Length: 338
Image (cartoon, rainbow, N blue to C red; front, side):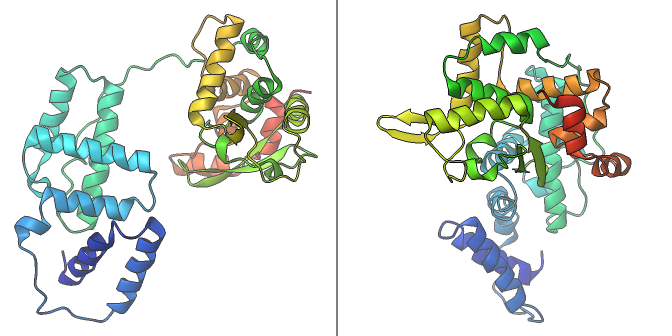
């Protein structure tokens, strides 16, 4: 690592606990600009045992990548990295392909399946890719390791009669509104707490959601049935106007109204399923797979499903094909319910 880059990183690490993500990003940009065309010749360089230490690398990795990653994602990356270090007991910069394979074999012997092992391998690959980019290592030891075979599970989804059965478990307007929202938009539960009432175009049921996973904006739609029940919930129960900046779904805590979070949404759907006696595990994500399955069964393609669910293609052909898809057309052709 160049002395200038090391100098900049040391400052960032010292300010890590005093500044937020955005402020750190601004500081890094300011340092890069200020140090441009500046040569650090006689800088006091930390010993290699420090700058190449596992703690130093992981702290810097967290500092640099946390700007673009969710807190839960970063926690998972660091957890896997620390687990790798425990199993191999070597500095990260000294690890080779055999060390990584040893770690993965140990996890396999402990009962980890192919999907879990590949998930761990992806996280380790990302860490070493970043280390190579930062000049801690010259080669990425994970690149040539083959992925594990995964057992493909049948896709879980709900039959149309099961969706109808769920409606019988709704005991208030919010339950039905939430059910119809998930059915019509197929949005992830993590997006719902951030939706404000005035974000929705109440004339045509359109709104835009930001997807952190794909780092793209996704257009979603509420059909006639969903609009009916959500409007009733907003006007009759919440006593709110459609231009209100209040969260779309709330619950009462004591004498205060608070946003219905991810955990609350999961619990509500679980309770609805329990009340109607449906004989399967029902959770918010199940509505996404149900919508995707229905699109294909009604004549759509996998790309139509990916387009509406906001999936990001992994190859050039798929990216271009999805980019040409119009989610509005997919919605009215395969999802819309009067």
